[in-house]
Length: 237
Image (cartoon, rainbow, N blue to C red; front, top):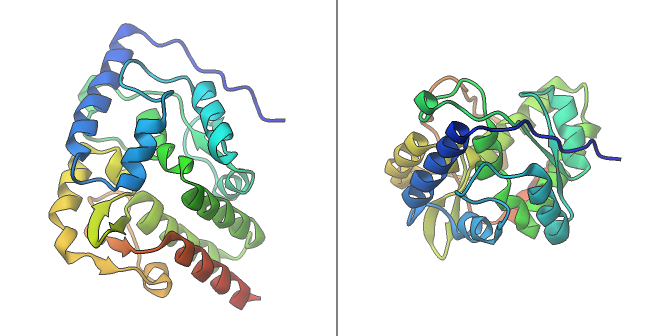
């Protein structure tokens, strides 16, 4: 049984900060973000600029669409726990919201990043399947530090900071871009210098969490990423 999705009570200032974050970022993403993301965001009636959303209502909408749900966590969690949740089709979200003076920089992801950035794509069946298989493979490779690092790099350069190709046009997609005003504009300026996605290329590229990104990969086909990931996993055994 999933844990109850209980959130704290938020005050008017926090709801106002959420509305500001949502409104300016939704406008900023027009023309830059992938339709894969924007269409899903528009479908998420439980996720709007009106107020901080209820996690249980977002979870219900995900469950009805792709069979996914949400789990509330206090912050960053161990990678093994993260894999286990994904394998069970649960994405984790915090419930704290940044202060007004933190609009453009956070040391740790807050609820806006977790929900505005990560939840909408889970409405897409292909991406939802990728996330489930990613989690299942992560669970299977528990204790294999080198393989887990490779998976973390795949997650970083696809789920957090990936671009996808739509009708021959490169569009931003990753949650780290979707949820950050500054990252969106920086990444969009780099879109003519994207690296073509290859699994080997992504898994051999280091990343840092403390600096703005300088490397972005262009994903052309999500089902192909799933096939390559599964073949890589099979080749390890």
